[in-house]
Length: 175
Length: 363
Image (tube, rainbow over all chains, first blue to last red; front, top):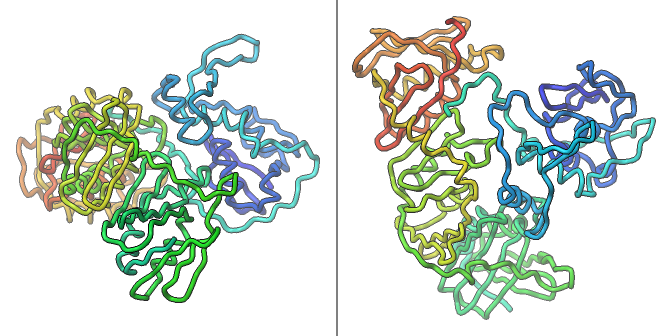
């Protein structure tokens, strides 16, 4: 199985056939896994079989977990025209809406960069949810590293259930 | 516990009730329906985890009855019944449906093995303010404003309708604004909440706001109640900027047949290729509006039905955005305003649409 990167997303290809829609967040990836694979394989991770990622900065060895692509990838979309800082109340509304937190829970918005400096980053709601999913949701816990990819059996899936953010490159906004 | 009801009545209630079920796999409650018969009032309750839909009938015979059942199998079975009357009976952990034969649906239990009690937020609701809105207004919102809503979550507030002294939908690339006041204190209504209002059966819909100042809004008609929660992000909604754009004066105006315009856009869409990024050219000429593909592989002219303050003008616009807004118009004639570099405007009675123009790479 090989992967190919399209803008800020990935698609999965098996035997030269595209088997997934554009996947931008690990939430979409996990949801797609649930839709497509059976209960046993759903808890495994898919693996890259080659270095063909299409971008020189992304050098992954065969056997690298596809989930890593999301961990190391810059979450910000350089084509987004607007940024906003989520206030705690807005963030909590999102977490409650997705059933990820109760009112008493709190998640920090500050992060540490590569040099160990603490800084406040601006995140969209999707990125916050991605962060929460990665750290709290055990169902999508990354499996242990294996050198040989597992055989994956694919069944039919309904693409309409997967939310794929639209890319609005080159479109000027009204405000 | 059992109840008996005319099949067509139950089918009608269930077909309305399932519109309130969110069927979100992450939240099991949204795939369940509560069925309650109390003092001859039958209520079906469904939810999308934010809004609750209550469908009621107050003339149903039977003993008091309560069960929570999976929406999918139950609704499909009821829709396929052909008998005159159907009876529902709770038998240990299964709901028995008798009519055309006898069917049994296992009911879900909670962690302690008890029948699930559906949340009933309406029971604790205390109304402080009362008003009304018309079902016809809701239908106009759904037909004419909904196409302008944001479909993605880049800026979440634009996935909802701003409802204050006017109703506004926008995704920052197009705006649809209707001059009908709905709330004195503006509210941001989610698309899901407004969709549910279409289930109401009477023209006048009662609206109640709570005494605690929360975002709850309760809509009701004689046989239906929607307990909704308005969105929090209303402060992010750039209503002042949007109002400014909607009220912007344009120099020139023309009127075109909506049907002719849609047909041209439909034909031209075949000649918009992937590198055009959905862009087509509009050129206002003395004879009419010329619409062409970027590669000049398709061009048509639509004559004006009316033209005021004509001026030569050309621009580039997204064909899908323009088509969706023209389709949302209710009249046969499109009143189109042009002349500004960043947008065009269309007016349909008390609804104003603004559509952003693309960068014109011919300049």
